[in-house]
Image: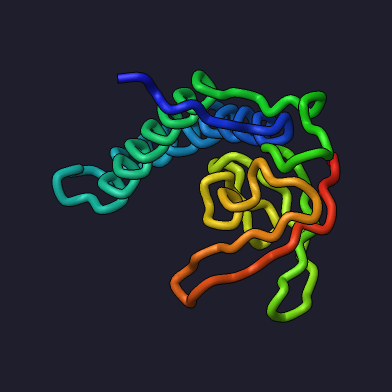
Length: 159
């Protein structure tokens, strides 16, 4: 089975690499020290400190494996290929909510970097899917649980 490609901006790649380094260097060492201390408390069969540290160690090792897999399958969104003719991964898009006459600006990123609180939406989200490939002036309809939203693409920018 082919592993899923992980779409990342250069900034997103850097964040994942930093997180991986932090887990490999700092977190691994910290949890190993906690395990060592817990063993020093004596009988490990009824030692909750030891059990907690071992569970944290397992989680850290799992996260390291996940990050390594993501980085192995990373495809960088090339800023050079981002145009302003149509919405692509990496585009920043100014949308007008037609019903409420409000403007909102989103940057379309891969699902690993999505952060709606910081106006970064996934290309797999309903709005992201609706605007991909569209050009300035297009009106898109997005079906969500609350009904349908209508947006007009007012502008497409490069970051």
